[in-house]
Length: 252
Ligand code: ADP
Ligand code: MG
Image 1: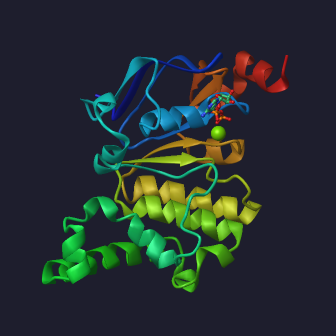
Image 2 (image 1 turned 90 degrees about the horizontal axis):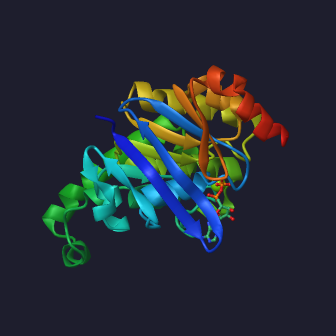
């Protein structure tokens, strides 16, 4: 059984077919990349998995369970975490505070208990802090721990977003263009992190990315999308050599 299975998914926005009868599955432990020109439907696929949108038709399952039965808030509880193409952090909070938000799904105490800071909340807080400190160490974020997001360079904010998703201890990590806007060095760091996330942490990664160097470097399999439909699927080398993919990229 695949960890994530999308079957014949279709989603339309008015007259635009953003995702068109699309099927693919992601196996546990792999890095799977989705590539394609702007407007191909890549982010929409993520939004379908995150349950921000209901597909017009088709099915999506995660670990054998029907994801379409779940509300968007429940998706994180299943162990699916994501980053956004346009970074979505709390700008007027610190790096540490943003990472603690990532722990939300593991919080057992309710708001009243948190306001009263009961012993249970104190114990829980300790566990969350430790989890977040591990993420800070892993992503080399120590120098920024208590800095406000608003004042940080773009590249650092991008890493914090990855950190917030990691802090939730996901089984499946969705990365929407993790290297966009990053320098060559920052992209190289991203590549090592994605490798370690899979190899050391055992987290399955589904990513959308334009940088073919990064895609080839970390992915086991690649799906090329065009106009919401599958153009090609295979190893990075197979997909890059596919005539339909070459034609789509050259606009012929
Ligand atoms: P990609 O991420 O591959 O660049 P998107 O998934 O963002 O592409 O968009 C796919 C298509 O769906 C585009 O034509 C886009 O304009 C359209 N689209 C995406 N989101 C919406 C929305 N919320 N409302 C209307 N159209 C949308
Ligand atoms: Mg997109």
